Each structure stands twice: as structure tokens, then as C-alpha cells.
Image (tube, rainbow, N blue to C red; front, side, top):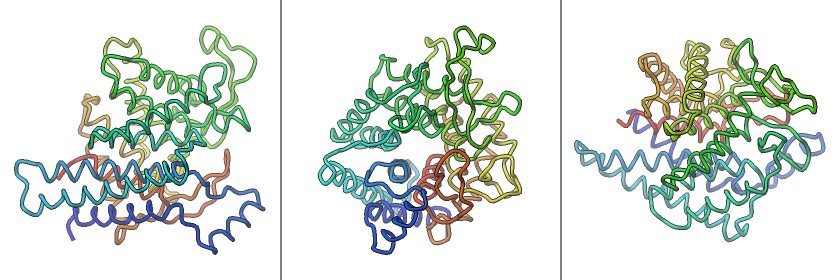
Length: 385
């Protein structure tokens, strides 16, 4: 079976998972009751929540990949059939968007919905369909009202805490940066993306290792050694958790891709992105993947972290951000091989289960939508073959 045939199987499975993501069997509902009683997280009634958002982003990237393959100058007759695969993907994404707009009245419940917003921007650029632009507009308006801390970082689950999560920062900054591309010459939304990633750079990183914590909370006291009028922060969660690193890199990579020279922070954020990129490569496993905790290179592989980090590396490579591209290309190819090896019959395995809170990581691995979508977007972004 060729590489492309294997990717098509992943596409098919991803579309199937998106179509079924809001379908809850009696057995699953019973499990949710037990998990809720134990204080564990359960599935949400939000059709744009981040597991669905990851599938949507993976499928939107796959649709663009199929279109490029079909339209290539040297496309064979077999390659031209990829336009049919693209149409099937767009049909699946349209059906899920309509489900959200009609059955759920376009309701938005979580900061995490920003990830689906990135997919809407991608789809609007690919199809020109106004409904995707309107969907992205709704998410932008929702984020405007989201609670923020004293430095302007959007709080995750703002009704229940004052914590900043790498998840939320990555999702929101990625959305704002992508959304900014719809407004040529206007840097308002890109500035918002910059604000989010800079907050995490200042308050959520470990100085000694250069890795990020899962999140942080601002304290009332000031700390002049952090910078003029800066606050102190309490770092929270696991240091170097693979998926948190992936979230941060997703937001940062999208932001630096759209930064222009007239924005004074370009150099600072470009250098930080490069640092994080090569830090990730430093911890890449021998089998090409990334572990659930980056430094635990002999620990369990995590396909969700692997897909997210690889995609972020691809974004930077495609934008010409790296001066020395060779190690990045090699890392991407190794990671892609690992992802294909962990996707039998199109089903992405070895993804870490959901995290319930800071430091609460159940060591359960298998097929989850966030692993499925992350791997798909990383396999269809670069290179187009």
C-alpha cells in the first residue's frame, strides 16, 4: 500500500469519526455517568469542542492537500481523482457545520471552540463559501467576551477559575492569527494573537529547561525582575507535557507565519519559535515520534503530541523561518513515518487520553479524535507528494 493510500484511509476514518462525534450510545452514556460521579471529565454537548475541532482542522488541511494533488501540473489520471476525495471531505465538514448551526443554533460554549474557528478560516479560503466566514466571525465575537486576566490572557474556563492553560492560549492565538489573514493590511487580530503567546512566554515557561508548564495563574504581587510592572505567576501542571507543548507551538507557529516586519515583536517571537522547534527536535524519539511527556523519550509515545508538534514544524518550514532547514526536514520525515506506522487501517492509535486537570493524566492510550485529527493535519500539510 502506498503512502497516499494510507493517508486516504486516515481521511476516511477521520470523516467517519467527525460524523459520529455527537452520537452517544447507551453504553457510552452509562460510562459518562460513572466518570462524572468520580469527578472525571465527560463528553460535552458542544459540537465544536476541541476534539471535533482537531478533526475539522485535519480534514480541512486534507481537503487542500487533495486539491493540490489533483491540480498539479504532473498529476496523473489517478491523482486527478483526488478531487473526489476533496469533495467527500467538504461534504463531511459541511454536514457537521450545518449540525452545529441548525441543531445547536450555532451555540459556543468554550474557549476551545477557537480551534474549529481555524478550520472555518481554512475552509473559507478553500471554498469561498460565506457560511464559513460567518462561523469564524461568530467565534471572534465570542472570544471578545471571554474573561481575561490582568495581563490580557484569555482564561480557560473563566467561570470556574483564573488559570491560564497552554491549551487555550494555543487555540486562541492560532485562531486570531489565522483570522487576521482575512483582513489584509489590518493587524488588529494578529496583535491579539501576539498578546496571547507573549503572555505565556512571560509567565508560563521554565527558565532552566526552556520547556513550558501546562499553565499558570497570575499572583497579585509584582515582580520587577520579570520586567517592568510584571506580575509573579504560579506555574501549574506538568513540565513538558507533550500535548501542552503542541498547543503552544500550534499557536506560536501560526502567529509567526503571519507576522510582518512592521511589527516590532517579529524578531522576538521568531527566535522563540525556533528555540521551541529545536527543543522539540532534541527530544524526538528514536522511532520518530514524541512522548506523552517530552523528556520521557523512553516513555509512551503520544500520537496527538506527535501530530501537533510536527504540524507546527511544517508551518515554520513552509514559511521559510528556519535558516538551517535540514534538521527540521529530517525530523518531520521521521515523525511522519512514525505516524503512518501508528495508523493501521487508517485508525490512529497510541494517542494519550484526555487530561482532567493540571497534572491529571490517565495513562490510557488508543484512538481518540485529537490524535486522529492531529496526525491527519501533519500528514497532509508537507510535503505534497
